[in-house]
Image (cartoon, rainbow, N blue to C red; front, side, top):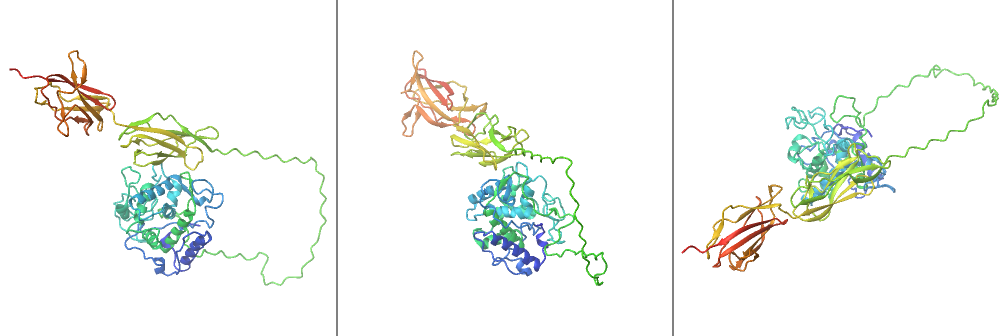
Length: 574
């Protein structure tokens, strides 16, 4: 079907035709759980679904135009299709990889922060379909940002709502009136309230499918809606665009996508049937639904007036056929058809030089996972989407805080995952890389998170440590741990006291300097010390008994580096 602008749809026969088409599509596809009654064709019924009143206020899109294409009547999940990621089934059921990933990530995020809403990713996909044709067939970059802005028409009251500029042209480039922006078509004033930063790049960008999908999900969940309830679902959709035809169209795609989808490469999604630009320029527009096309008059017959009487019919004269001359050359046998070239397909995904993946807790991994996608002809394949996923009991994540990210392969067929960040948990986990939409085996990488270690520990005091019997050492006992020249926090440090014999041999102390334990008893070993945020470990006060002589305080940091401080207990002169 050709795409038309929703708020320009005619009343009367047009409304009935669109609603009937949507209901017919749902009925023919036998969609489970479809209970939306659509009837009537008055203006009031256009703005209300049965039992649902559009929420007050300006809708998310400002009632901008939308694509009215309806899904195919056949289910995308017929026998032989692969709804979980294959490439079979109706082309309309294919959703570009990055766009689909954004919808599913938004569903997971909202399920964690607002579990009562229960927004399904298929609803976000349905809205993305009618608003922008899934970001114009998935024309987005590796971060999910559209390759060119998607703008609705100027909302100047001519055929659409009249909304004066609210963003000083920051999003839509118009400083007089607003325009709907991005793959989910938010008007700037709504984006100012609902915009999200879902991909962790520090920006709330309506042109980014990750940001826009999460914003759309949160907007639909407003007012404590439960989207498994029919009335809440209808109110949510009508809050996006207060059009009854819009509700019917979104519900049609929602039920269609629930029956199954598959992933297609970015930029290869099915575009809406209309060539009308999103910006509503003055190019030739598609006629509105219900408009009667002009008729072309039938030319008069060339044989004369039709009311002129005709003479009696003449008997046709039959001529004998001419004899076929014998062939001068023997007939040639047909040339057998050439075998079609074997299609290029993904054959494998391999390690492209990734080194050892190891990092201490709460640190960045210096190595990044890199893979290469190869074809069945043994060549590197560009333009393939690779999903990198963190698997295992770990709190490690990619730089944007996510556990899964999609990156395309470059001209050399390679794709590199974002920087890995370790968490507080030590142990091993797996980084898995697989080609989106392919059944080839993934490649796994083992990563390890180790405890904090220091490569150097230094004494903070350069003064001689001397004390009298029955007193204590006056200087503060502090040491600093570093790794690669930078202070490192959270490093475990062990403090031990030793006696030094006449021959210089060191033995664990049983008398002499000591730390005071919890029960005020002398303690000669402290094993539960850690460095603070500045990499400094502070020891409690060191006391002395009546034992004189030379002693040693030894500090050992995680990683094996040690620091030895000489202690002297000397009786005062008479």
